Length: 370
Ligand SMILES: Cc1ncc(C[n+]2csc(CCOP(=O)(O)OP(=O)(O)O)c2C)c(N)n1
Ligand SMILES: [Mg+2]
Image (cartoon, rainbow, N blue to C red):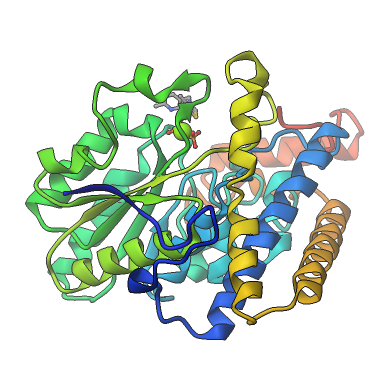
């Protein structure tokens, strides 16, 4: 049990050389660019919601290091069961920006065919499983896949992401218990942003930390600075190696802060002091990593600025493209449950198409989902 907070990049620009991972320059630069893209994706999505163009968003600003550090420590064959606050896991693994916006619009390009809630991205091609709304349900799912991989001797690792509040849900305990008993090759990544909507950590649990909860289930828990992408990378890479060796799960607690609201429906000013937000702004994970790279001479200030430019442009283009796509065809409502459509559904479909032809039904497909 490591209870100290692992940190590679200090807030004061010091670097812990002993823990500095030996990553290729290309990888380091890609990590920064992906973090920037996540921030731009988020800002654009929140603006789309505020201007009434989409119905709902869940921002992850401030938590980019947790997402990208973890994603960079996995291989493409590994599987990921994310939470709703982790678009960076998708972007690092190769999901198109447009695919994420397609989900926010619930349009005909949405990989979930407009049937999921917004912010519930999915990407089967990159081994990222569709997000579950009930918190922590992804843990037993991830553990099941990891147990199956172990039985089949498939050397994959499964990572599942969740928040601090999720560790009070029963599925956290079910998942952790099974993972411990069966030594499932799973990495539990908890982004501890210190709140479950408006409930602060100390009102959620009497445990001193999230990491300590692993002790009860017989595997290690580590705490890392969740605003330090290299620390998150290091901890998740160690955990993934341990899992791949057959030594079982690890719980990684990434201590962080969400800079924005819980969702577009939330006003954090009602429960979180502004001064604290100002304090955490100084620990911005993107700024910290950007300064590290420029100080090392791996990127110039001008290159960092153009990465922001490129991020803003790419997100604007992708959002615009998503907005142009029509809603899913109404017929798709009747697909995918049965291999062959049963007669009662066929009748309902025919009726609907007849009504549409006669102009009887109101087309609400442009209405916002929430
Ligand atoms: C089983 C269940 N209970 C309650 C909710 C409502 N809910 C949605 S998000 C959330 C807070 C989760 O907090 P945390 O796990 O810390 O993640 P964060 O939102 O901070 O990333 C709650 C209670 C839910 N989705 N599922
Ligand atoms: Mg939380």
